[in-house]
Image 1 (tube, helix red, strand yellow):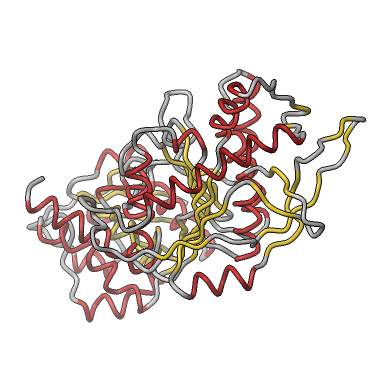
Image 2 (cartoon, rainbow, N blue to C red; image 1 turned 180 degrees about the vertical axis):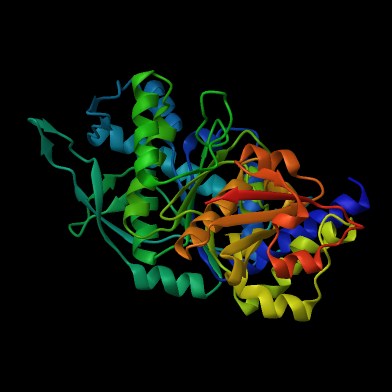
Amino acid sequence: MRTTELVDGFRHSAPYVNAHRGKTFVVMLGGEALTNSHSRGILNDVALLHSLGIKVVLVYGARPQIDDGLKMAGIAPAYHNGVRITDEDTLKVIKQVAGATQFDITARLSMSLGNTPMQNAQINLVSGNFVIAQPLGVDDGVDFCLSGKVRRIDTQGLKRQLDNNCIILMGPIAASVTGESFNLTAEEVATQVAIKLKADKIIGFSETNGLLDEHGNAIAELMPNQATAHLEAMEQNGSACTGTTAFIKASIDACKNGVPRCHLVSYLDDGALLQELFSREGIGTQIVTESAERLRRATIGDIGGVLNLIRPLEEQGILVRRSREQLEMEIEQFMLIERDNLVIGCAALYPFEEDNAGEFACLVVHPDYRDADRGSVLLNNIIGQARVRGYSRLFALTTRSIHWFLEHGFNIVEVEALPNKKKQLYNYQRRSKILALDL
């Protein structure tokens, strides 16, 4: 990696480091991820999150390991409606597997982190009886035996350990108030813990980097209802895998109960967790309660973000230079597209009331975000504002984007068509093309 790439990468990730510090993340590491060769790297990255001031609850699963353990013990796994039936013999195997998995994770997150980015780091790992379980009971005449569900979470106990700078490690076994042990799903444990802690994120892992569209590309963002529809389609065409399906269902439940964002990334892609959390575009799929992007009117506090966005185009001569003082006076004319507190797009509507017209100006979209037609989103918003004000015409001046405006219904006009005040300011040296849209 060249020095400039390293510096650019660090600068781009810094806002996310600040944004995530002090937040609570529930990381769900399924058994499939733990059997993969990249599991050590994932755990090192979890430790890195902790070192950056993020409060981490790590919930592990062991579904494939349990199946292997049952096979070795000569026990045929039993299911009803996709839920494992856990008799006493099955529970003995599950306890052995879960205990061994917990020990392996503890060992990897202990002081033996030499030759990793977390060398010499002190990590305090805590497990305990934070979850109280209860039996699933009987369904359609089928007794689930020692398969259980979450009854209660010791929220205060979890918060104390997180405030003491500990990583909390939780597995799929929990005790009841009567002292019995029950087999739970890691997805339910992660979901209920996140809901009770009011966590900021749940992060899970699958073979692919999130949910994929028909072209095999990761879908960056889904609302809960969209995720439900996508999951139903996957199940109908037989492309859903057990672990991914369980996590997506848990994420939908978590979002509906107040967890803002749930992320799904690949355990096969080294560093996917860090790319998802510390880059602008991420790498996997987010299921969100509200979009990471929002369109809003600019305020005086947005001056710096707008300047950072427009300065490169001003230096290239594409935009007319605006001083900070001028921008401060005009900022209320601007609309912004904001993503993760970063201004990624802007446009302005300048009024010419005496001519019953408005100018669409200063349209800029960040280079990393020009693939989703955000310019059209800004234009449509400005057109809507102009119509509400009763303007009969919207015009724009450009030296580079003539075809884009023509595609959006504008027509080329002469200088004489400009409002009188704008006509007096027209720069004949720039020779900007004038385009107008009748409203």
